[in-house]
Length: 206
Image (cartoon, rainbow, N blue to C red):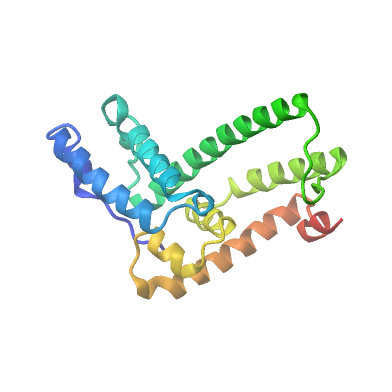
């Protein structure tokens, strides 16, 4: 089982909000700089830093409204924060995509754009099929334990077991335990998918 932690700054939210903010900011900044969600890796450092600030602000606005949602002492705080950060990263990338889509539409209206190589795209039917498959996998994952959901999401972001251990705030000697837990979680997810009649390998290869 993953080791749980309760950062001391969480006990200061009402008693000393300034110290709570400083403690959280220091902890979260260091964590997200050292072990950021993988989807941050493609961003320039300045953009990644801006995104981290956005994540931290999201957690502390309205009298620490989001931060107060962490109440499960059985789940590592670092793992909870990772999920919050991961979701904010997705929001950020969606916004960036909309901006790029708008820019591209403006370019197209101005005239043809010549590129070095043709863009590869999926046909609409295949896109719809994959979208449905992703939704099924998401629902199946939701039936697993919180620990499995966290490990599988980290794995989907291409974290190695060593990186997972660091992201979860666990000691380095837990690397093998995290790797074994991930393997077991993958088996559990596969069983759930089989019960739902989903052959993931066949669906992805078709």
